[in-house]
Length: 328
Image 1: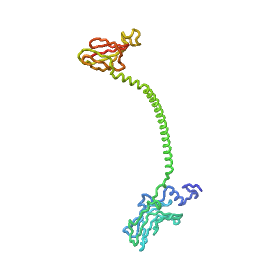
Image 2: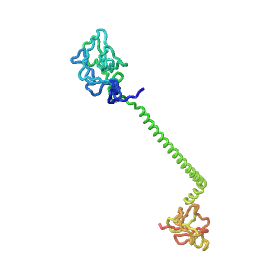
Image 3: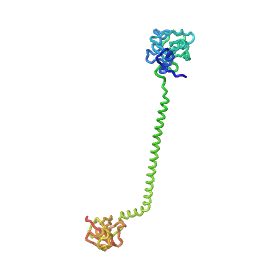
Image 4: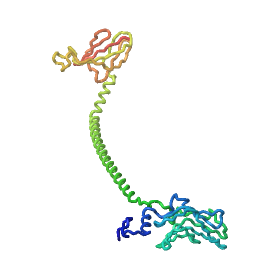
């Protein structure tokens, strides 16, 4: 194997180049085929008027680094049609190294291309010659220039192998996908941990709440019921007002006279704050009524003192309650 370089000026005939050097040079960046955009691209068409002749139009072709140029219609006369059978002929651009030329060649009854050490062909068209045909029309001609298996178009460079670029790009995509997937998995793990921690906190809180509710619910609920249901008789009052008055009940504890001075709980000097007490009234008639309160506010044997025609004071222990009959 030798390394060659080309071209350089020849000094005393030390740099001499052959046609093969130039052919190999052109073949490196111009692929075999019909030259694009030159003339009619060597199109094969019927003659005018039609007959047994076809024309190869103007154009050029490159065959293994050698060039064919045709600057006028090239006429080819076909062999007369058979009287017994049809045949298919072809027209090729043929490189013939022994003859040192690229030429347009008519091949009777042959549709294959020859490609060996001496001959290399580009098939331009096939021509169907019907039995007893006297003319060849466009319908009989099949254009083969675009068929890369037998011809094709000459362009700068051969087909670029993009597989390595595609493999590199795919590897980049795979790496990016893996990175994103890893990040997403890490985020998902973090989220799962956070959710688990939050669930644990909630379960702990809810369990404590259940324990509290289970322990206190009955007593708390009963206490609320006792406060709301005013259905226990507190006292009966005879007022002689000849009406059905509205009733207001007020209560307090440690009032003056009920607890010795200095003996009341801290902050309750003079008695606690006064609160309204839910009550219901059962009118016995227009002269008397029963006052009902919740069981938590009732008194067993209270001392009842009439303050005036509309007010009564009930005391028992440290508890006091005032019943007022409101004017209708």
